[in-house]
Image 1 (cartoon, rainbow over the protein chains, first blue to last red):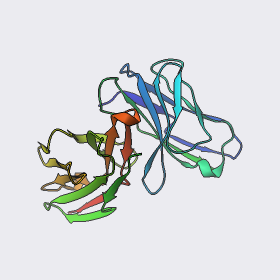
Image 2: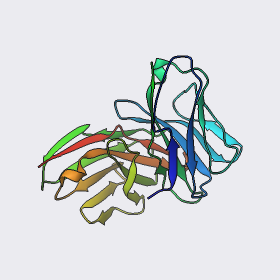
Image 3: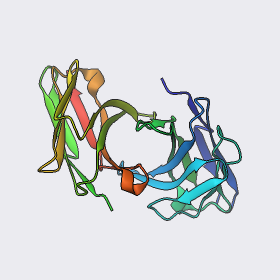
Amino acid sequence: EADIYQTPRYLVIGTGKKITLECSQTMGHDKMYWYQQDPGMELHLIHYSYGVNSTEKGDLSSESTVSRIRTEHFPLTLESARPSHTSQYLCASRAGGTDTQYFGPGTRLTVL
Amino acid sequence: GENVEQHPSTLSVQEGDSAVIKCTYSDSASNYFPWYKQELGKGPQLIIDIRSNVGEKKDQRIAVTLNKTAKHFSLHITETQPEDSAVYFCAAMTKAAGNKLTFGGGTRVLVKP
């Protein structure tokens, strides 16, 4: 069982609100990832980080931003949520030098 | 970049029967191929993986085969049980792409009792 946590698990908010989705892991992994999972199930990489103060945009363009100030913490922020941001957001991490990515339980976001 | 195709998108099997999911990838430099199982309301969990220097790997009722020449790999679940019902994802990793995973579109498996 991977020690990677996401909060909140479910969030319903109104349009225009600023939100932060939290992701933390206690495994000391330096690589962390954010995926967006649409209702059709596909997983799209939106952000990743290879270590503290390192962040990169993923393959799918996203209006969200991320930060990596501590190894264990990789929060994702939406400055002004819109209904098009409604989705499942999954965080994952991986130890350097290994291949296995571990996923958190996800945050299901609904923007009204 | 890498492109991973997964088939079928849905699969319904009778309990006790076998289930097979197939994936193809485009980048011959990909060298790591994990399979994830995602149950309702949970994040994907790794169930088995295979590296490019191995042709087959088995773990109890689950097996994965890899054909590097044809660039495809498959997941085989034998003696399916209702708890095997979930969404399954294949993925491919390429070191040249910074070891990022590219996922297939997923297969929703339903095991009927």
